[in-house]
Image 1 (cartoon, rainbow, N blue to C red):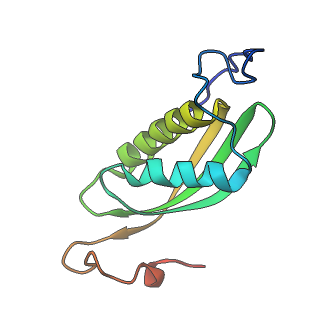
Image 2 (cartoon, helix red, strand yellow):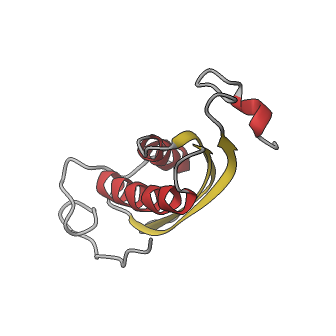
Length: 125
C-alpha cells in the first residue's frame, strides 16, 4: 500500500495530521517491531518475520515474511497485513509508508501442525 507524503508539521516535526504524542522511531528495529505486532493481529497469521526495513527521514518500506494457517485465503491475509501494517506504522511513527511487501513462506495445516508445532521446521533459513 502506498501513501503519499503528507508534509511535515513544523511545530512537531511529525507528518501533518499526526498527533504530538507520536514519535519517530529510533531505528529500523523499532519500525520492524511495530510491523510485526500489527501483522500478528491478522487472523490466519501464525509467524511474522521482518526481512527488510528501508527507512529514511520521511518514509519507510517494509518486507515481511509470514507463515499462515491453512483454511485462510492467502491473498486476503497478504492484503490485510499490508493495510494493517501500513496504517499502524504511519500512525505510530508519522512516517509515510511507501510499500509493504508480504511473502508467505509456508502454510500450517491444522491437525498436522499444531499451535505448539516447531515452526523452524517450516522455514528455509
